[in-house]
Image (spheres, rainbow, N blue to C red):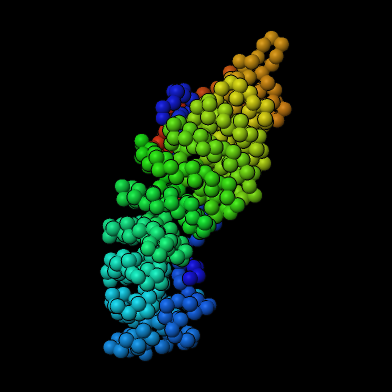
Length: 539
């Protein structure tokens, strides 16, 4: 059917502490969520097939498309005791609901839905199929329209149809459940509460006749991913039972199945637990080795969710991050960092930033994978939303890396690139870039001698960075103002002569807080949170 709708780490006495340096999915607005498959609706409507091949179409040569005006007559057919008339009326309703702009609400208002749900229980497979198809398309509508299907008790019946001997009926039931689960978190939870995950997982297993038809497998993978998706997150103790099946689906030869399995893992690794227990569960399953291989796939529809999953896993602790590095994920990040797709570049920078929030050995692995030169290029020349993530990646190295690693950053051109980020309007990014420059200045000062100047100061002079720093003395943000004053006094021996303590920005404590995330972090004496954006919210 055509588818159309659808840590243990050393203490850091710096502004960006260990927790702030690694940023969970809910703390970062990643534009990649707007791209490709995530951009599409999480429901799929089944229109009239161009070639009659499904159950009742193969038996009925009537290809006429009904109109809304025919509904009164169709209601009489559906209400008849004649099986042939029931099938004809139901099929016509299905065709009406399969149009490009289906009159879903008009059909609901006609009162036909209770009959369609009743037909799901019939022994007539053709009638079951047509009724399930019609209800699937109703469930592809608005939330209220989907709710009418739920309220009529269709979910348990659809679950029973998952063991139907008829593959078309089974596939349509899978599709309907996927639409219901894809509508919203509450509807997803209703399917889970009806114990819907287990039957959907079993649909993917090989039967006496071999593997399931590819149509069923595609719909099942998509439906399972919808059950793992959304915020608030589903009950992990329930959805974790899908992991063995999803791991198996990663080895499928069908790209759509693999893509949906990767998306499901990206939802499962969006870990909001303090112990990173969700990430650890996925690591223990062995699935990451297959997910990492997907990074090198030729299709971005698979690369995208695989990258999302890898990025989520490296938000965990050092040990969990190291598990991904041991799978050689860094080598596969290089082509993604230079991809023509902005979303992939941005997500890759975000993943790298979480790796550079680790220990010196993990940062060294990033250097050895030759990721730093292209990362600096992204920081220097890319679009701002990508540069932001690269800023975090570079600044984290200055917080957690060795002096030699920071010297290499300077060599690769990090200083002028960070200076450019000081000019942006994003206060948090200015703070991050400013801290990176300060950390590099410390290394430059340690290398200074009677015959050698502070190389970082020289570079700042060459790119007008000193002027930019002096301008930040007038910044409205207290934290930026004070850090800039400290840098100028420590490394340049002066501050703006017109400045004195009475001219410091007068702001209230509330102005020092960014975002409303409950897990606000402390930067100096000020609280910085990260704006929480629902990346998987249903709508």
